[in-house]
Image 1 (cartoon, rainbow over the protein chains, first blue to last red):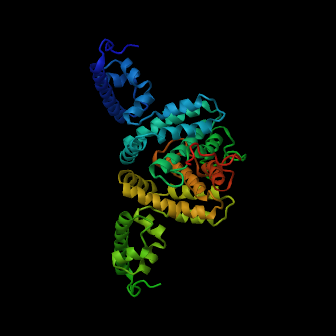
Image 2: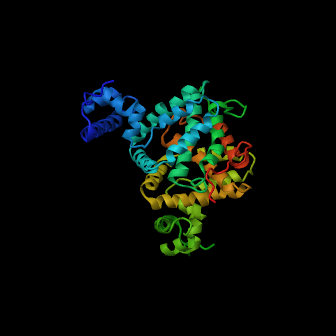
Image 3: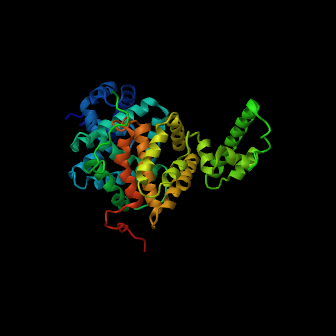
Length: 216
Length: 216
């Protein structure tokens, strides 16, 4: 990996240059994500827009998910939390996902960053579409890939919906007693929900209900 | 119940007058809810602010929850959905709650109204506090009152968090395949989650985990 020939610079100058380059990439990423959506944006295109080598974008942000999270000013990358939880396999996955989400959102600046994302997604259709694509591909899709069966994507979205609701109730609306409940209490209560959605019996043994009005 | 002596008026004049009075009450309600919060606002105080008889506020909006929902321009009253689901008792409550929520949110104008509420609550702390109080008292509190045990309020909030996440994923972000899944599929998959939160074994038989750092 090359760092664009900047390795010979050192000290504060290096850091200031790196920080400027980073901001330049983030600006290009925000523009491209919002104009082209999450799916159609590539690290290479962002690098070209920012006038830097693609390797530098990888160096700063690792993956496209990481670049998106940084462009949204999120203090962490949701895709990484999913990846970390998946590292332990399917057993206990529900609890690890809840714990990972709570650890991330309990951290500083997360609520402020989330409010900005929510405000933007509820005001602009393009921002909402971009966020949806990121969630579908970068977060839910990653989870779905680890779950087997024809309903893997639905299972993963249902798990995501519970995590999203937990975040809204605990961190955005701060509804009590959930907002101040200790982390392991929430993990113990909500973990089984995600585990059932992902690997359990989704319809209580009854099979998927027939659609009420089949199109003929 | 008196209707403020308006019963002798009839026809379009009556309706126009009623519509003006209704808007007057809603304006007063919006101001009072946002200045005093949900809990401290009474139907009587709103009536006084609007310069109408309190009975007229009851006549138009039924309950304080109904007044709040109308003031937020929601096309339905969430507290009524909870009340309707509770009418059938605790058995099957989870499925009835999910079905009631989906029926309400599948209706027209619901998404647009919700986006306005979300935008407002994510931009103004007072709007968020008002919404939190409404949810805690009018929606979750009502559910908690029907559930027994020391953790009734936590159980109700957890159920509420899953419904909130479902609404965000299906109606706000429209994440697929959840957004276009048929209603009964979602009811069958998510109903058991709410049922466990409300009446089931909350911590998988292990009891509430000890808090990691007890205060001595």
